Amino acid sequence: MNICIFSQKNIPAVSELLAMNYSLNKAFQNAADLSAYLEQGEQIDILLCDLTLAGEQPEIILSKINYIIALAEDQSPETLLEALSLGAREVLAAPRLSATELEAALKKAIGYINAYNQRSGVKSANIITFISSKGGIGKSVISTNLAVILQEIFKKKVLLIDTVQRFGSAEIILNFCSRKSLLAVPAEADNLEIYWQEIEKNILRHSGGLDLLLAGDDNHEPLASAKIRSVLKAVRDKYDYLIIDTDNYFVEPVLSLLELSDQIIYLSKMDIASLKNLRLGLDSLKSFYFSLDKVKLVINCFEKTSELSIAELEKFLNWKIFTVLPEDRNTIISSINKGAPFAAEKKDSELFLALRHFAELLQGIAADDQTDNKKTRTWFNSLLKLLA
Image: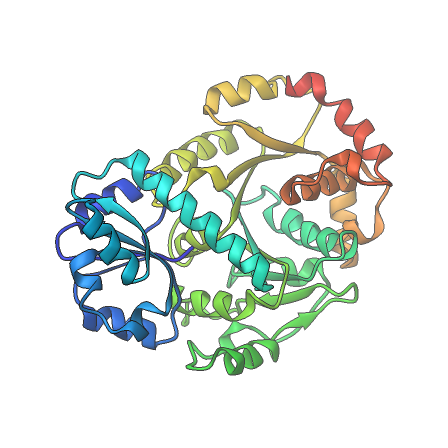
């Protein structure tokens, strides 16, 4: 959700409250900046706006905002009527606003927008971004094969975006060799449909139907945050899922991707070096301006003989483990060397079954809802003792 604030005196207080659970995208102190932002084609989902400033804006400006929450010094009947006449759907008392009141208002606004989008048939892809705190975790292998499962098993339309410029692996895993990449796509465009056409020219199509977009290998032109925002905006209504592989550092454009994501998959192994970096990484995430509810911690290459149990790990990290994926280096190495994702070939392996279950969890699908998943349930029933 693109949440913005338009205020001359409430920005610091409201921004601090927002930072507890949400990410503030833009703060405007004057009408000219707000108008210029909207005229660039940007869409504001939720605007927290001083009531006095809202009353000074042309109706055409306010009509481009999905949901307006007015900030007023009082909540008298006269104030409420004024706010409603300007298109506001809620009035919050500022500066005496509490975090609980703000969160309740935002949840109501998000629910309204999501319900409206469903009724009007607006399509918006679920953005799932993979991160890790060191190399060798298997982030590219897992993200690529998850994309294949969503595409081929669950019949979703999926775009896999590899934002790792110099050392990206998705191209190798899917057996591509191409110069097509985001390097050939303009930084931005006035018309979203024309921009989509430029992006589409540089999308690679895998035999199973999965689409792939590469960052491109250029040390002299790093992938800019503004560009990745423009790309996501243009492609989001074309797909069901955007699966994004990232670099191993919390810098731009990774930070922007984390903010824009619906779900963040933090992948780690259970060796000491990985867990040390994982704990530091989780502490870093707590300082960023987005809800931690969307961060899903996944343990890769899990071995049943591990000396550390999942329960002990959760206590050490003070974080719930979303799921685990078993160690199966032979399947992974073979699939990479052949340029064939194991999710398309090794459908009887424990790793495939675990990754399929992972895909079900991400979609909110219970395992029992699937007709061909007896083996999936058997595998995860065998892990129940370890997960307890």
